Length: 75
Length: 302
Image 1 (spheres, rainbow over the protein chains, first blue to last red):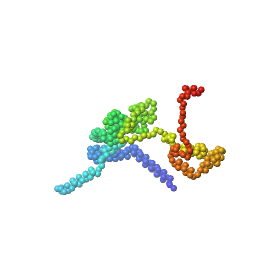
Image 2: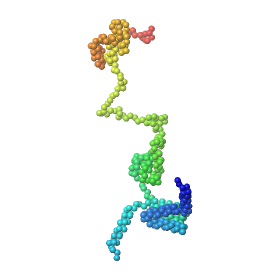
Image 3: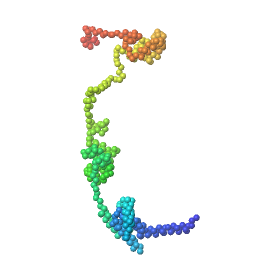
Image 4: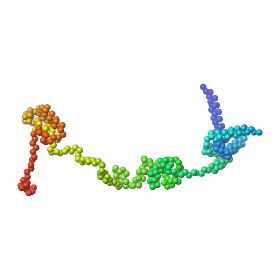
């Protein structure tokens, strides 16, 4: 037999966790921003591989700018 | 002091590393990089990060401005067209305005995959036909081709074996060479008579006649096979001591039968050969008294 109180508590905790993560994602969009950072990193690597240093530096600057803005907002 | 050998070794190692790196790396996919930048730009716009979005947009514009490529115009080669399936006859037909030839050439040009629609349109001008149109025109399940042929010559019969009213039929004369034999030719003559025609020879007696003559000699009448089993007349039966013709035939000896079998093996017999029948063939002479001829038909009647 399962303890009824234990199961209810577990469900409550899972729901709370899910709601909090949704709220954080809605408010800050961390997952999307992380994905954007990954995409920019991939583009910079391709430019670097192709010898397009200037373009690669431009993408890296955007990434730095993004990191700074997130640091300011969270700080 | 820097050791010369160490410096050279470092240079060699560095060059080797660079060469290996160049050889191992694949061609960078710039299209993928552009897609990544575009996706990141959309995310920034959704997140309200305007400054980062603008920076990315400027970067993309800069790349696009630097990487403008000039379109190289490729000439359409007739050899390539023919390799793709067009024939010289089709090309000539296309020049003379033949629609099926034009469709075949255009289908070959599209099928070659060497030229874009824009290039084909520019090269062929008003003769251009899209791939779909060419396929539909040449589709045997559709009747565009037949309709075109009919439009070219409406009076030509659609079905030559079954001409309809209003259609024109042309006939060519039979060449004289078919009738004029040349030296060395073999000439064959074919009879126009019926195949089973029997030659009529008054001096010959043939199988059928001989059968009846034999019956006449044996039985006193021209009996057929059916008659042989029929009952004879009472007086004749008494005289011959036989009820039927078969009984009468049974009275003959084997010598008589063998003699008749010999005769049956021969194809034909002249009247002179049939000596056993005791027939005298005499010529009847029709005597006409010219002095007593009637003047007309009525006088003869009266």
